[in-house]
Amino acid sequence: MREILVKHHVIDLCNSLVAGDLNIATDIVWVILAIALSLVGGAIGGMLLAGKDIGYRFSAMLGALFAPAGVIPTILLGLIVLNFLASY
Image (cartoon, rainbow, N blue to C red; front, side, top):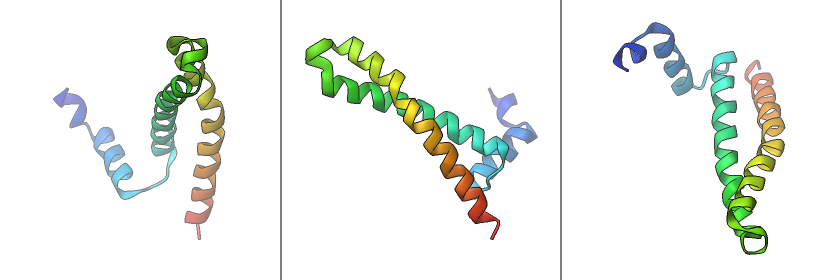
């Protein structure tokens, strides 16, 4: 694991994330992080909303599947707007 973390491209990616630079690598990292968090949030939301009616496992699965459908376009649009505003 140490060999992976000391490579220059990983160090550059971490520096870009900390500095707030917007490039294709950081955009991909932010989109993947947003998808993962939306999956967890959708599963929790599905369990809270419909857990008693259709079962907790099924509602968690449906929530995790439908949550990224709204999050992915929103995150991409937000990154495009941030990239546009950063050029000024």
